[in-house]
Image (cartoon, rainbow, N blue to C red; front, side, top):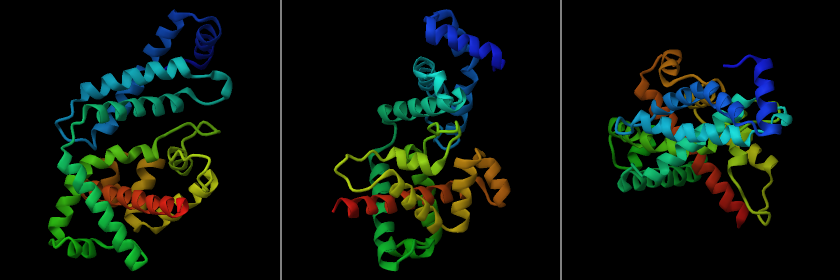
Length: 259
């Protein structure tokens, strides 16, 4: 990365004078961010997805970040760039449509059943209760979660790392900001953040820890597995359940408010 003094000079040269050599130096200096973000996302993707493809999508995101960054806002460029890189990779994955349609249908089915049970029970259902509702053995249900984990990455735009006012990522701010509602909708950003906090609080302890360690603290799946004393596949299952539960809960609240 660049020294702070040099970085300021390059931003001044490009942002205020349109110096494209400064632009090239900034892109080159921050290229390692693309590798970092691509590598982290690849942990939650099946082997069929090529890391080179992720890197290509991310490189476009970095270029967009350099072109759109405003140094006068007082936000760290790394925070801003990571959000853009990550968003570009997710957009590229969506457009490539590598996920089988049947897998998408399974994810929707699982999310719907989970929310029906949550409404009936007044809490999120356990694995045992979900398995019974699906007429599965509990072990088969966990394998099902593992399969579905391939698609939950595409739900992570609910947790995208957009820059906050202090230059730091805040998961509650980001989830709220990711749900763009029209002015006619009755919910406010403040209300959305309150609902997100409630939803996270309703998760089981290990699910909350996975959300916190991954989205707040930036740990990898392997590191989270070591911290929790479970396998990496179990971390994937916990992550999948947490994402599905949060999406289902927030979707229901949104429909209720819209009437």
